[in-house]
Image (cartoon, rainbow, N blue to C red; front, side, top):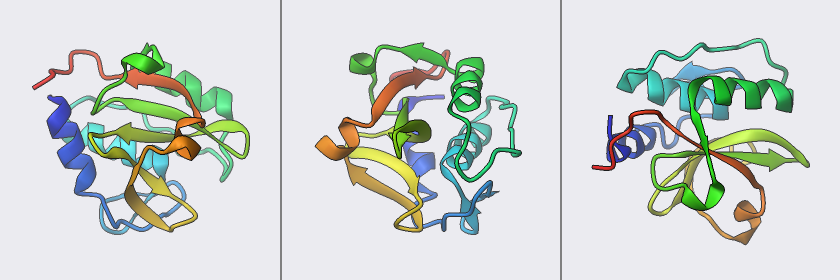
Length: 137
């Protein structure tokens, strides 16, 4: 699996509607569902937890990320890595880093979008993760 494959696969979800706990491309995903679906399509088996509330438990999300991904310093994150971000003051949102910014399921917009990583989004980043064994190609 390469970084470019992750970004390409995540871009296939652009426009997919927001759906809490959704896991279906074109029909509905949430931010966690986007990460789970993209990684599953590319190979790694992900232990998917779908019993979280609309406002997920930050500790549960962080533990699941650490279980499946490798935590890295935020300033070392590159395209294809995953950010853990705050929403309403709590780390409860995930997004893929791309060459343009981030791909994420934006609940307020109502769908998966790719947006620039401006100051407003940058200040929300609290952790970064990479996929073990990912290739830089």
